[in-house]
Structure formats: structure tokens, C-alpha cells
View: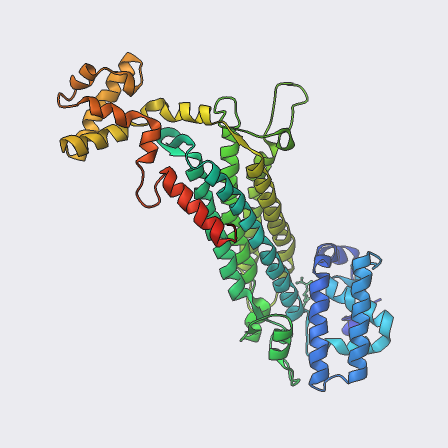
Length: 461
Ligand code: ARG
């Protein structure tokens, strides 16, 4: 038997393997709500334009409402033979209201239909992600305010570099996440044009009103070119690119949580709520959630690369390759949402260990730059020379196996005779961090101001 939806010119049915490779209903059923919303807008427009009479339009609209109810209630039976969500919905509509259901597809194709459904889904996903990003930023900013003066080592090359504060470190992620939210907002703006009415690829001979459907579905305007309307998946690529960058940020943070919770670092502790044990080693507390956030990044990148690859060879306009746009996209944006929630949970859960952080902040001659800066300020030494002198003092301390401040004044003077007792004051980590008052620097006063400003902008007193 040939296909009921498009089988007019076909004598026979499709091979079983053809049905298996062709069907998308197992994953595009996720688009049911969007598909029905699009059809409701389309039929209302057809009626207003006199392309479907009012009674038929009413029958279609209430039939669609019933289909929607069945899908929501879980009583709808999806059929692989009907390929995709579009034909599953339409076939059920025909069962409910009879042949008049066939009028719904006037001036429309599955090509503009799927382009519409996917845009609506991505738009909803973006609208869900933006507040989830803000929730993580809020958790970070609150923590940053509490920990504005909590000294920790700042690293470059994962070597102790200069002291910073835990609050300053957390605010770095607030900035990254602000750019992530910005990228999603920006993608949403370009996404928000309605492809419905492009039909298969060339537009339609019926006098449709694309402004009306665009407006009804919350779009800013209809898309301008019918070929582009059905061939474009930039909106999905942009959302995936934004997601991939956001996932990179979360992965870096997750990596830091993994490091910080080791007994070797011991900078933070996760409670039992965010730790798992080992089935063989009773002492273990593993940061599995952080590791999974780091690990799940791979799927998000994969989805972006997969869709770029699907799209790169496609001639205008629609090709069935594009059906491969969905699974990775759904998974990637849902994965990002899960990872944001898990990171928010961990930021709220973790307990920093200020003693361990402070001890580590002083290790590795982390205030050597402060000494060099002192030579510049107090002795007017050019910075390059001050750097060299300090290097020799560090070498001396290293040879003696002591911290910089444990050298005697005479030992320091053996390298630079003009050094005075005052130099010792700059070697403490607290003082070092307090001195970083340049705009955006690590000084606790800066951190407090920035954390407060963020919280205030987002509605906290
Ligand atoms: N299931 C298809 C997709 O996801 C819908 C569009 C099919 N269009 C077509 N001409 N076969 O892309």
C-alpha cells in the first residue's frame, strides 16, 4: 500500500528499512506542541484570508486542540509509518474531523512547517537557558560577596602566581556567563523571524498573510526569502555555538572543583549531597557531578560539529539530511540546562577552607611581584631590574629553603644593599591582595563592589 499522505503517484509501499531510516517520529515528537501551535496560527490565517471557510477552520482548530490534549495526556499513539510529527498530527486530525483536515495543509509544506517548529523549540530552549544562567551567576555573586576577602592563590600555568581572593575567582565566572547569556540573546534576535508560508521552497500562489502568522507566533517579522526560509538552520547552529562556549566555561569551572576538592588542594569541600563514594575505597569522596559536567561538554561540542557537517554540502533548498538537525540539538541544549543546574547546586553547596587557601596563597614565593613593585616604588628601580633583583632574592630563599619573609634583612641586602625593613611589609598575602586596587583587580573592596553591583542589577538589595 502506498503512503496515505504523499503516495498518489506511488503504486507500492516502501521497504521496511526505508521506513526505518526515514522515520523521525521517535525524536521529532518533541516538537508536537510547536507543530500544533504553528497549525493553529496557519488555519486562523487561512480562514481570515478566505482560503478555508469559517466552519472548516473551527473544526480544524478544535480537532487540533483535541490532538494536543491527547499528546499531553500520553494517550496519543505515534506511528512510524506516518514518518514524522507533522504527518502524525495531521493523520489523527483526519481521524477526528474527517477529510476536512486535508484543508489545513493549503499553502504549506512540511519544509516550512519543520523550519517553524524547530525555531519555536530553539526559542523556547533559549528562553529557558537565560534564567538558568542568571541563577548560576546569582549563586556565584552571593558567594563572591561572602568570600570577597578570602585569600587564595591565583594561578598561571597552574603554578602559584599571585594571591587573589576566592570571591574574585568566582566573579571571573560571572563575567563568562554574562557573555554566554549575551550570545543566546543575540542568537534569539536573529532567530525570531517566521519561515511559515515559504511552503516547499518557492512560496505559494495563495494570498496568504505571513505578517499575521508571524505575529501570532511571537515573531518579529516573516523571513524574507522562501528558499532561505526552508534551507536555513543558522538559528540552531548559533544556539549550539553559544551552548558549546557556555559548556566550555562550565567544564573549566568543573575542572577547578575537581582539583579543589582533592586532598592535595583541599580548597573546598562538597557536602554529601554532591559527593559520591567508592565501592572499594571507603575513604573516597568523589566530585562526580563536576566530572559529569566536564564530561558532558563532549556531547555539546559534538552536536555543533555534527550539524555544521550536515549542513555544509547542502544545495538550496531543503534536503532530507536536515532531519539530522534534531537529536543532537535537543540533547545539547537539554544537557547544558542540566549542567547549569548542577553547577548552581555545587556553588551553593560547597564550603571553602580559608586556612588551606591562605597557606597555599603564600607558598611558591607568590608575593615576589609585590617585592619587585616595592623596589620600583621605594627605590625608583626600573621594573626590569627590580624583576631581576627579586629573582635573585627568590633564588636565595629557595636555596635556604625558606619563604621570602623569613629571609633576614642582611640576606636581602646581600642582593640589593638599599633594601630597608619596610620591604617586609609587602610580603604578606593579605596586604598583597588588598593592594590590587586597579579597575577589575583582585582587591577585596573591588570584589565586594562588583558582586554587590551584579546582585543589585538583578534585583537583590
Ligand atoms: N521530518 C522532516 C524533517 O525533519 C520534515 C520535513 C520533511 N520534508 C520533506 N520534504 N520530506 O526535516
